Image (cartoon, rainbow, N blue to C red; front, side):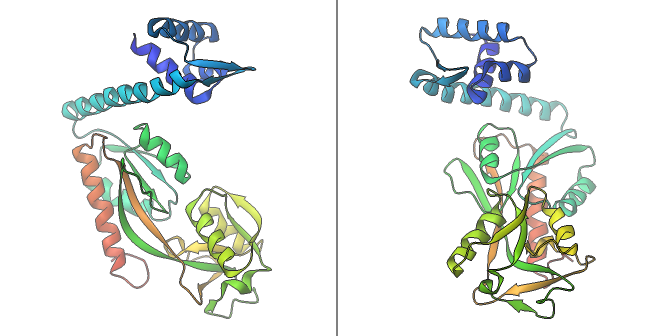
Length: 299
């Protein structure tokens, strides 16, 4: 059994399509198919069932996938550990976030400590975060909501109130607070289903007795402020994502406070470099300082 066979097997298992997997691996479809066939011959069983033009993992394939993922995960952790030993002041932190509203402050603080460490940040849904953590493709995730799993460490960092953002000329702009039920006929702009704040507020509105009406659903939280300012709709905005320069009024939610929990996630089995440990301390310190202020801006 060869390492290349395992890598090709994982690519096909995840895409369930030889053509797409070959394109992602930058190899020919014929070469990929032959490699998978040799792997099946080595194992003595078929790993896939063909359904039309797609491949689906069969029972043997699902069992082997768990082992193959684990084997490649451990090899990748070994590579990271050796890289850190040989170049402790260099490398890249892989980060996933559901909201990047405060990330620039955190990265700036960390860069002052570790100027040669690079970053790669992805905006992800909660499920995408879990998938990448399982595969060892991210070091940390800043997530809201938290993720409760046996294999993922979850540290709650901050309790973040959700506010209602309305344009300056809106009928509610003169108020300091509003009840959710008063928003039942409003047009809303928000993130897609699967993002923490969207899922949280959909559930809160349902509890209040209505389903929110969205006229815009996207995957860029920062754009929501611009849409509210342009009077396209109102939005639910976490307090940490407020833009005080925009022509927007932020209202508190009456009756029961709606908050999101911001958590730092990492996989319990993943190797954590000294630089990554230091990054974690910067994140914890940042949110600790934020919790000690009244306006959500750290001292």
